[in-house]
Length: 474
Image: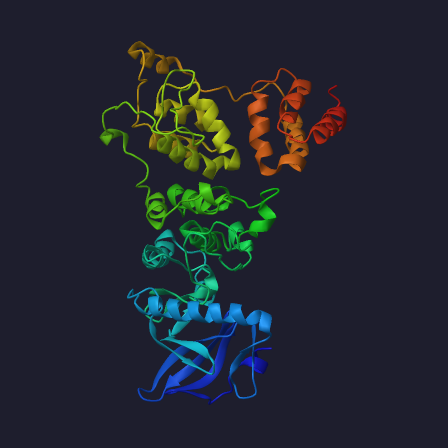
């Protein structure tokens, strides 16, 4: 296919002579070429979207039909605009755009040719990587990605194949053919590389942003550390089968902060991922966790807008008004560990707690790993915000206990209940069953409690009739 539409070997584009085709993608082709004036190797990207255009006998690029003409012209204009912007980037870990021009009724982007190895080849003889080696690659690439985001662009195709290791060992991010601006109302074309593309990139109306690139970046780190590509995003929607890095990685080789940050970046819900490179970088280094020895004095916190987005203040039954952004921060952090049920868990805890620290302590009971649970509590232990009403009630926090997580119901019954419920609500079944087990007096009551999480009434009845009967606990 590439041979049919690619420019032939030796073809002249201004002062550049095409040597070979390096690759073909949804937006066009990439060639290795030689600058005949300077005798330098360069990479040239040609705008030729395969679904919209085709190569003519005179080597010009033409829309396939009248209906695709407007889309082709719009894409060509965007290609030129983006080439202009990318040419302004000056960062040692981003491939440099040298120039761009129009020819053959399309456009071309000339980039530096990077001599080295693709990350996949480089890493093959070096596994397992030490954490220092992982960070030596990740940190410079994050810096480059941050520059891209700061200018309002997304890379949208971060993957091992687009990371090169130069001969001097430094990493460089390649292939900006999928890069697009992030602007309100703009439709972003669907771009997917299974395992690295987040769910929002599987359809053109998905809410894409820096968090989308960070999902892909987290996928690259997961692959570097674990040795396996992450499960494809669409396969994780119904039931998340991706083993968390904190569970499957070598904990003697990698810090808990790095592994937890990787899992955070790979959260399916884009609202619960790190929202910026700075946020992700802090999580990797552990800087996001406050040091209890240097925590500031307690300060009362009042909400400026409610959790549900109305204009009236939100007051919980305790009389405490919490800052919405602070609760959202806890929610995003908790979602790294328990998934999309986090908002419900936070809301429930906020009804009982008198301080932010108490909210964090209550919800931490749902974090299975003891080390991660302790780190989570430490992260928010510096905020002991007191209620804005009766000061005497602040002391009640000392009596606030974490909800019990033990149960008299045997592990086999819990596992069966979780598997049955997962058929209806997916991966969150584990959390739902665990919380219900703390309240249920027997297996029958457990099934009745978890059945409440099934929205469809008919499915709920089927679950109760079938699964309670199958459990033998009627």
